[in-house]
Amino acid sequence: MPLEAPARIVSELVSRGYNAEREAVTQLASSDDPDRALERVLEDLAEETLVVRTEHVESALSRDSPPRSSASETASATEDPSVSTGTAGGTGRGSTTRSPVETGGSAGGPTPAAGSGNRSADPALRSLEIANDMTGASTGTGEYEDFVSVFRDRLERLGATLRGRVNHRPATAIQSMPGGSEAGMVGLVNDIRSTASGHWLIELEDATGTFPWLVMKDREYADLVEQLLCDEVLAMEGTLADDSGIAFVDSMHFPDIPRTHEPSTADRHVQAALISDIHVGSQEFMAEAWNAFADWLHTEAAEHVEYLLIAGDMVEGVGVYPNQDEELDIVDIYDQYEAFNARLKRVPGDIEIVMIPGNHDAVRLAEPQPGFDEQLRDIMSAHDSRIVSNPSLVTLEGVSVLMYHGVSLDEVIAELPEEKANYDEPHKAMYQLLKKRHVAPQFGGHTRLAPEEKDYLTIDDVPDIFHTGHVHKLGFGKYHDVLAINSGCWQAQTDFQQSVNIDPDAGFAPIVDLDTLEVTVQKFS
Ligand code: D5M
Ligand code: FE
Ligand code: ZN
Image (cartoon, rainbow, N blue to C red):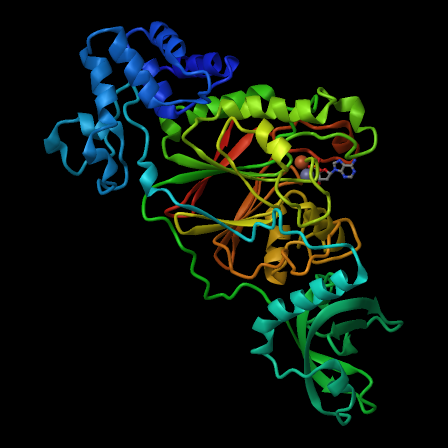
């Protein structure tokens, strides 16, 4: 089927305020007279209907005329039990149900050019679980005690993996050990200083106090010091000086991802599109690229894309950066979300969407950011999206995806050496966060943190996929078998970005095979 037919149907439905299932669009597009069928469906829809589904199309088509072979064939394919068993080699394509039974093994054979058949997977095969969503659970008051408890919690949890690896003692106990002893400590990095002679002094803090650790400049660990951020959790081992006032570092340990980590995969061929930074409301929002993406999702090429993850910055927001208003296309924040909702309608109604907020969104800026409030949820109701906090851990058919908008990436890139983290390879900056097992370690810098009773920003469980955005660059790679993906954006270069030489990767959608964790990139600009 030419792309135009489904795309035209989708835009017609969207212009009337409806979202549609892919299968419904396919049925309409492959009916004998798509325009008439569409008209029939629209006539029949109940007022409160938000999503046009196959039932609507089937009933409109059957009312319209006695079933003709092509229409009934497509319609009945959805009821064909052989499609929903999920045992046919995972392809589950409509073309398989239509081809002669004898073709057996060649399930992936050519598809008929016209009519994309039954592309809908059985929703019963899907599973989507959310963990670590702190929406509605914020307890922080911003008082001093909250800072104490959030750091204590961080040290407790990230230190747990390190305590088994080093022979550790509390800071105060180390101070009273005899000079020359071997000592170990697990703590938060409190301070990093270089000494007059070019060595490094790292102060670690635990619940009992602080202790200084000296890294000699010619040691292999000097290189690691450049990668440290304040407030991350570390373990050190070394030898105490004669007066026990300092220790010389022999080894340094990060919470890190164990090299033995084996990612989980889905049991069937199913894909997720990972995107972020749509920035609806900005003059630079790339409407055409977005529409091309949404239309592509309705095609057979995207039949396995059943999940869409959006890692923040849905809209451009207002007052986020100085002089931002000069580049706004929509000045009212609620109007921006209305416009975003209209863009969302174009996405097939049978795709499961999960979204977290970013720094341009209308939620508190400090992290963790709770999911959108009721008023914004109402506005964004075109899809039955799962709206959760930044960060959140989303598990799709056994594959866990840590979603985080990515504001701390700016900081990691600014503070670490170029080869460890840079804008052209955003996934490398993500590796650092994985190694530190924390999405935003440094407090008091670029990234604003809201202290809570619990530290929601630690990476407790090793995710299979780590998804961020924010820096508007596309990059992906594996760190100890964790797939790190920074999605690009849907906003062309802004004046600010031009002034600082940020060349955004706009209009790309990375697609992950959840059964193999392989990535393909679709380009829409
Ligand atoms: O930010 C997109 C990227 O651009 C991210 O790396 C921050 C950077 N950026 C964009 N505008 C500014 C201003 N005005 N100051 C500092 N950094 C900026 P996003 O927040 O997604 O627009
Ligand atoms: Fe952004
Ligand atoms: Zn951002």
